[in-house]
Length: 357
Image 1 (cartoon, rainbow, N blue to C red):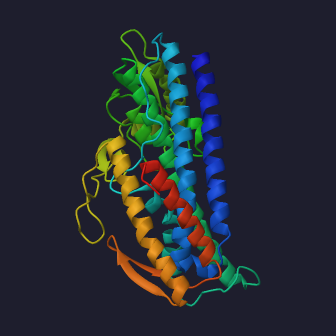
Image 2 (cartoon, rainbow, N blue to C red):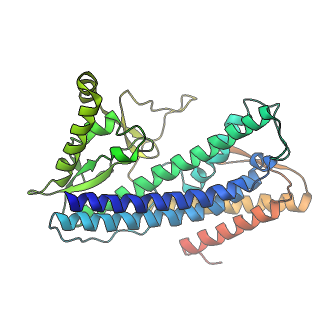
Image 3 (cartoon, one colour):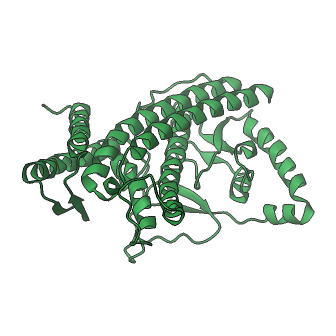
């Protein structure tokens, strides 16, 4: 188990470094905005377009890490690694990376609308009350960014790893818990799920900020079982007899989240949005879904280009609906820069999709 523990330690160090680097780049971009920019869709969409290019590079790196990790694990169970793994596949269904990248701005606004009397013109020279409110808004934004990065990164890494297992002829895997990676230790849901066996044709069931990884299972080797057993015994001992019994009796329900797929929960999952509209069915992300997402983002970028130009030409606010959402593009000293990000993003999508300039 020493070799496997070492492989997991190295992999986690690399995973965390990739997450931290991406979050830092993205947050530096968000932090460059003025207070008014957070309410201007022309700015937030331009910024999130720039961030999405970085997000795609981040997901590619996480998938590469997943394949490298899988090859090490396969070597430990004496299985030759095989199978071509796509460099990039989206991590979520029923949305696209650009729509996810702008969510920190949505989180900021959701907090800010609770106190409409506070609308600072700059970040400095704020009184204590306003500073506390603004800090809360920014904290909500960076938390959403970090949570999304951890979730998407973990999905990308584990998805690539299980695809590598499958391509190498391995049909089953086990989730490996990591109590050392969480301030509160492994949650009860993961502890129970760690005793189950999963098919490499399926994604690993997740939950918010889940840190579980995967280990292959062969007819003669199930290294994750022993690794989990040691951690679970330690968790139960630390919990004490009564708490340990409660932990062991946790009933895990596996539901399907419309974006990230199988999730672990203890209660019936609400399969609808706040307005009562049924949530769409989830499907495993693949190359076809990835191209569809790229095409959808390309169409959005083409639409936005017209509205950027309209605001630039008229100097007036432009309100318009698109894809079921209302947008407000407003004049700003940062409008040209946001438009530049948008133009670069459009060119990136055109090149990725193989379209003529």
